[in-house]
Length: 142
Image: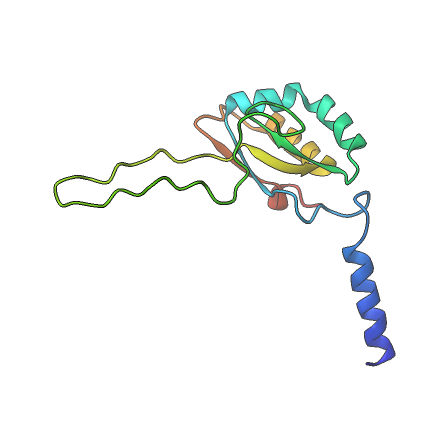
């Protein structure tokens, strides 16, 4: 390995391990989907959320938009696999029952993502219903 390769690897490692103060959250959610009630609740609790993010050891928290709880408590679905019910055996004379889709309501955010989402919510024209999606990666890029 050449010296220049070692320097490049060290620089890459330093960039990947930078603290939350100067780096974007690599594991935070980028797509946030919410309705009018969730947007209003997020905006109402925004100052408390920022204070909780300041106290978070890693600079990020799970935010439950259904409960407006910065710790993600309450009923929420955080992506991942859903518990699959027993699948009925299809028969020619009965249709397979359709289940309503489960929507995600808990998102991992850092202070910059939360601040950007607040700005997008404030600037959004019209209602959020049935649901509106914001792409924090695309809409919040510097």
